[in-house]
Every structure is written in structure tokens, then in C-alpha cells.
Length: 254
Image (cartoon, rainbow, N blue to C red; front, side, top):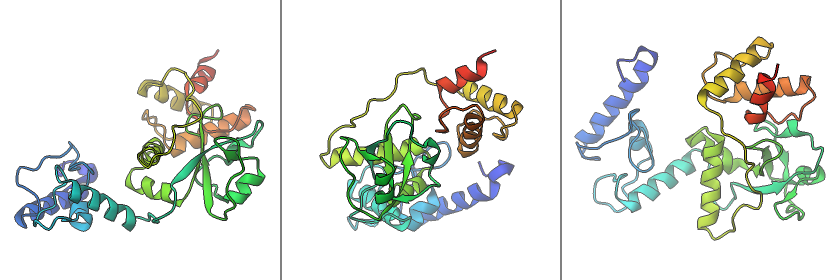
């Protein structure tokens, strides 16, 4: 991928880092990774292996493929370096009241837990939130009809590992389950999933209506969600920014 002009410098740096890791006997010469160069169970790029990889068992190598001690130590080291705060939650499942100001549900809006409490947000079992001044964002991954979460600063640390909100929620909830907590209370909404072509149609339609999503690429990123919010605001719909089947149907309607 070093020959791809779009990101040649980045992948050239990764190639050189990989060769140095092999030359230093930190990883085996037959090490394998994904098509984009990410390696091992933690999917580190070579520069991240060099910067954050940990030889936890002291055998002289960084075994990100089959050495559990190295895998977990490297993952923990990386998380700590990108902003994870030990002893704090990543977030929690919550409930929101009817007629809530759904436009508040975005990662850029941060309020204290006490402020969310005053807006009617409660725990997943409809109890008061803990008394706390910790900042949190409200996340509605399936729109206003689906599950809701308060996301704390550790959630944003997970996003620095992978920018997908669904990835961060999955990692956070999996960690809760491993720690012995119960399953989610809210059930996912049942609706057809969107294909990449469906999302391209949504993006193209929003662009034609004057809501800028950028070049249609079939990926529901921040710009597409922002354009969706603007469309929802102008059409008196719940402003949750959710790019889902209901939005597709609305845009397909004559």
C-alpha cells in the first residue's frame, strides 16, 4: 500500500517500522496482519506495536498473536496512553423521557451526570442516576426508539482506538458482561439494516435537498449524521441524527 499515492507516506512509515520490528527480533519474520497492515489480536499498526507493544512475560518478543500476557498488557498500555482512566466506567445504559430534546444526543454535547438527571435521564431500570459531576455524552445508536447510553470520557478513549460508535459500545458492554453485569435492558429495534447503496441513496438525496453530506460514500459518518439532523429539524422529525430505515423510507417517498 506504500505505492498508493493517497496514503503513501503513512504506509511507507508502517513498512519501515515493520522491518525494524523484525530486525530487532520483536516479532517473527512470518508475522501476518490484515490487508491494511494491522497485526495480532489487538490489530496494532507496526508503529503502534513499536510504541505500545509490551513484552509482558519477558521472553524478548511482543506476541500479539498467541501470547495472552503480551496481548492484554499491550492493549492496556495503549488504552492508558490514549486517555483511559483506571477505576472509571466507560458509560452506562440509561432511559430518556418522552418528548426529550433528542438533538442533545451527540458526542459533542457534554453535560454532568447531575445535569442529565435534571433533564429526565434515568438508569436503565428507571432509577435516579448517581450523584456525579462527571461529564457525559448521550448516545442513541439506533435513534430515539432504541437503546440509550451515557458515554463518559473512557468511552472517548475507546473511540481513539476505533472511531466507530458501535465498536466502542460493543467493547464497553462486553467489558461490563465480563465483569459480571447483566445484559442490556432495552431491546434493539427491529428494522431492516441498510446496505452501502442505501446509505449512498440517503446521502445523495440529502445533498439534493440542500443538506450537505459530502461525497456519497455509503458510510454513515459525522457529516451524514449532521445533515440528517438538519433535515429532521426542517421536517419536524425527532432530531436524533439516526441514519436508518425510517429515514430511507422518508427520502424514497414521492
